[in-house]
Length: 609
Image 1 (tube, rainbow, N blue to C red):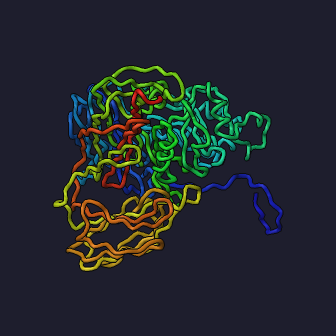
Image 2 (cartoon, rainbow, N blue to C red):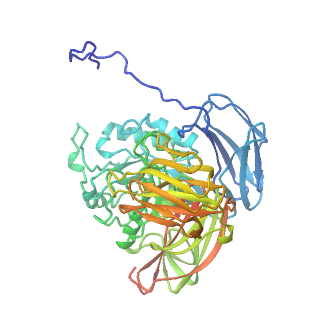
Image 3 (tube, rainbow, N blue to C red):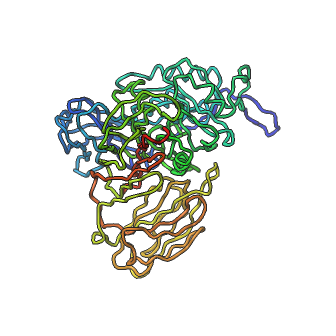
């Protein structure tokens, strides 16, 4: 409708106005491999180039060289993009023997554009499949139709697993049928998995946002409300609290996540039992380690996942853009026997998965016990569960044990060099492992801004200010996690960095390299200010606390260059005499990404299950 003559008399238009949003020229490249495959199993390499805002560019053309590190067969020497293509897949690749594979992409002049994430080739029952199960399309609060949503995730973001999560109070019955039709069309066992589902969108006091995933189509949508729906014929079927939702769905073949979006999940409102298997710890909305703390304190045994919760039609590659979203969307890696609904559902229910802030890495966390452990398929705290005896426990497992300690093994292969591996027992970091020592530290400093105002929708924290270097000049400057290019973060002159940044529980910052030994780093922000003496910094960062929800500024000293992309170690960890011992790890890499394993929950046989 348009008020053509400024008379407040609106006339219908023959065509609905629209604006095309088109990608710019390539700014950065992506080379995407699976993370874990058996030798001899076929897989594909995915390639795309993104513009500065993270949109896959269709302005790529030319021939590009591919070289492999590791035991790989089937890789062509070159590939060619023609203008209009937004991505390429190179199929028919195989690992010829166990090992680690990385692929480098270069242009015709030999300039390296990107190195892929690592693929670990080894024998085993489980393979790794990457998913983003949380986002929505233009039929509700997103953009673009639902089928374009699935096509983007499968064909451009190179996802293996997806779902669709429309806010329930916007889902008409006809659109619920469309969702079911779309997932049935896109699901292709062995190639791609699509689950029907929706977001139960109750307010926080009633339980807060939860994701519902069904194994199969044809299930009934149980809404939190009909707030934005005109047709209310089935309003009596609403479940207005998570208690009611869990009761209604208790016999259905489904899995639930709790997540932190506009209506942060209140997991204390009701025990999800066997239905709620995980909590979402990272999304476009930010990073929320505190929800794992809540879960541990409540005695739950949740796994953790990371997704986009994206509204911009880019599942699996969900950049926040110029908006109040503060973070790049996350990804979850499922460790499953096969790429099928049954295989992924088994991984979901047994918490066999790890999450990242958008990066792709290989991560294996396990424990070996001297005496056999009883590993349960489902949480025995809720009810009787099938179990098996084993000396070996993997991430996500719930196990009754007789030992006082566990031998924990961690293996990680990363795309970007490692910064640290934190070994966690509950929320306690019992050891931080870094791939360098005090003598390796150089004149490189990382300054990061962390945290949020509070848990709710208006959690955005603004960091406005500057850093000033005394006694040396800045010779190099690089942003970290600066996704919004309309936010100020720039070097000004030889001794100053100015910023106006946003965090939502995640962190953003920058690295500076100095040409000499500085005597002081003066940090001034809208929330906290202070001075850091560079020569006093060791392996631990300096911290300026800013209150709020884990708001702080950290200053770390790093080696001039980081090169280690592998971690492989074992540690003996003492187990609690009573109750659970949740054991998990957190990985930090140079590019600003984080990853977390789902906890293993070990408890003494004499304890209540």
